[in-house]
Amino acid sequence: MSLLTSVDARTSPLDDFGVLLDDALREFLGSRQGADGELGDELRRLTLAGGKRIRPTFAWWGWRAAGGAPRADAVVRALVALELLQTCALVHDDVMDRSSTRRGKPSVHEALAARHRRERWAGSARHYGDSAAILVGDLALAWADDALVTAGLPADALQRAWRPWQDVRTEMITGQHLDLQAVARREESLEHAVRVAALKTAAYTVERPLHLGAALAGADDDVVKSLREYGHSVGVAFQLRDDLIGVFGDSSVCGKPVGEDLREGKRTPLMAIALSRAQGNPGAQRLLRRCLTASAVSERTVDDVRALLVDLGAVAAVEEHIEVLVATGLAALERADLEERACDELVRLAHRAVARTT
Image 1: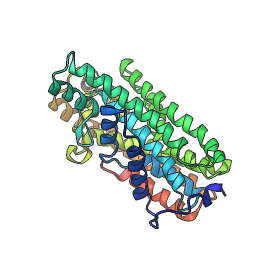
Image 2: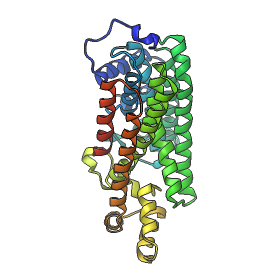
Image 3: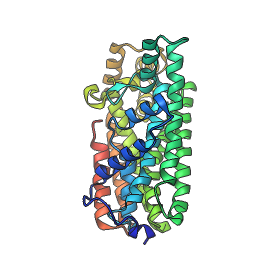
Image 4: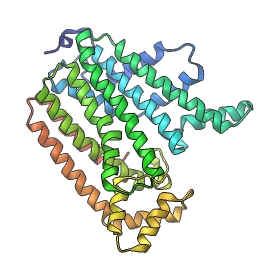
């Protein structure tokens, strides 16, 4: 059992991780008021605007599954780092994808460009917005490191956590780069699309957060292995669901325009499967490739591609693969000696991750 089981006996009586995390997040961001100016303001605006807190939640239940205490303030404070890492990723991702909204409000680069226009500053408002947003993301990454190392963890726990923390940062960046490359190289292979999903989402969203939580608790190799196997499978399934939402989701629910992934030419497993199934159908292939490569995609093209994805069976294939991945992940949990309540919660989280609409 980790030393952290006895750390921070003075905690909230509520065993409600979401409440505890939001309190810790606000406390940390409030403590950073100072010379960061509009960068910090935008960082706080986005981070506190909502979000599902998926990464810290998986990390918390990785901690609990490996025997960590139900109440441990230092661990909650440490997991603020994962939410700040997510802020970094969202800000940079929106710049790269030219996304105008995030969580139902203007994306950071759009908000900063709008301020440039209102204040009638010199130069290009778009360039200013993009440049300042990159700095917001950089600041979020720096603060993520700060949140982890200043959380009050025992030295041995912090040392155990440092390796998965290094890995999650690097894999997030590598996955984003592969995503950029896929568009630039007109990548169409399913293998490449799944690799991007594994790095950009599975490792970053589920697998490494679980690893981080388990490492904090001093988990043995077998527990870490089982949690990572579960995390990889559920994480890929999460991304496949995200791909479907990005094409078929309700903008009033998910906070982003319907069909945005199609307009951005995302090389997702969904599109890779569709292209493979369109072999021998030149018209279908032309439509799919036009959607992937055109500088502007009309609403009619989006509607036509959505219908085609269904007709080709690509949607059904993705749904089937999601079910297989979840079953594989849950089987990995059964092979490990995990705390019972935490294991039940991981089962519930797996089902929630793939049944969501946002």
